[in-house]
Amino acid sequence: MEVKQNYIPAFDENELKQVQLHISKYPKPMAAVMPVLWMIQDKYGWISIEAMKYTGDLLGLPYDHVLGVATFYTMYFKKPMGKHHLQVCTNVSCMLRGGYEIYNHISDKLGIKNKEVTADGMFSIEEVECLGSCATAPMLQVNNREFYENLTTQSIDKLIDDLRKTV
Ligand code: FES
Image (cartoon, rainbow, N blue to C red; front, side, top):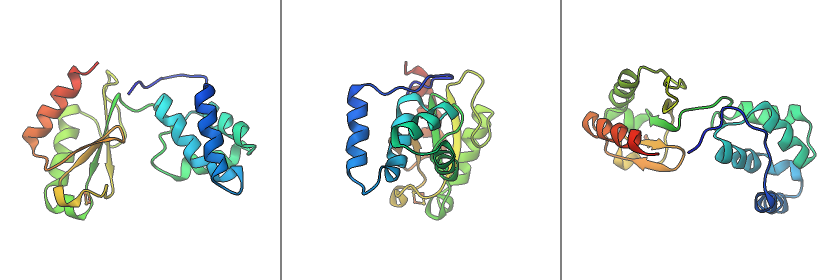
């Protein structure tokens, strides 16, 4: 995932069609604020103040309303995260099967704590609640998409090495 440190939010034609599709699913455009914020985060890696204003303009909402939604939900990042954002589950199943060992191993290895980013911008870490993969605990998710399951400290070392090699 490319994380832009600074950006001027702008959707292209196809993305604007997607916005309209989201709006059409609900009685009022206001209800599309979450999927539109998600589209912005997917495109730029995080949600800036300008992006919240842009979302408000698209949906005819005051900036304060968008700010309230973006800051209420932890899934929206209000600052740039790492190129590889590692979300480590420490909920019950994962905790019982070594979730904190995994979390602490990554934190120590990368020298970062919760929601911090490594100096080179490659990695960030976040402790999260259940990601719905309890049967394969402990697990983590990379960039909101890829699951890595039945983790061990050895498999974590390999994963981080592999991720470093990705362009
Ligand atoms: S408790 Fe970790 S995925 Fe459910």
